[in-house]
Length: 67
Image 1 (tube, rainbow, N blue to C red):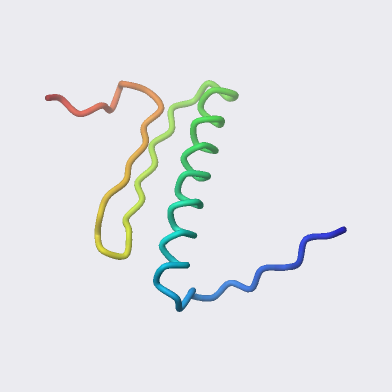
Image 2 (image 1 turned 120 degrees about the vertical axis):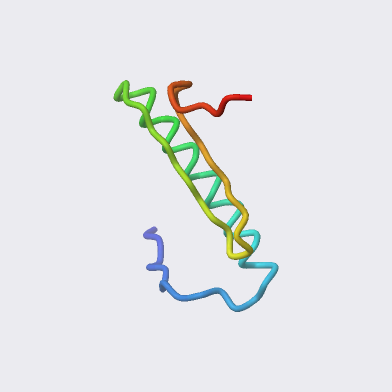
């Protein structure tokens, strides 16, 4: 069985859009973490939600914020 091709368009339902955002954001962060471990590279990822909220990931402590 093959996966059906997903049409790329905006999800109109707000709750479905939020669920999709949360799942894909966590998947993207997981992939960034895997890339940093497997390839021994430093990865920085910034994601802004539609409400302007910032989500960030940094694989090393080189770019970590100071308290």
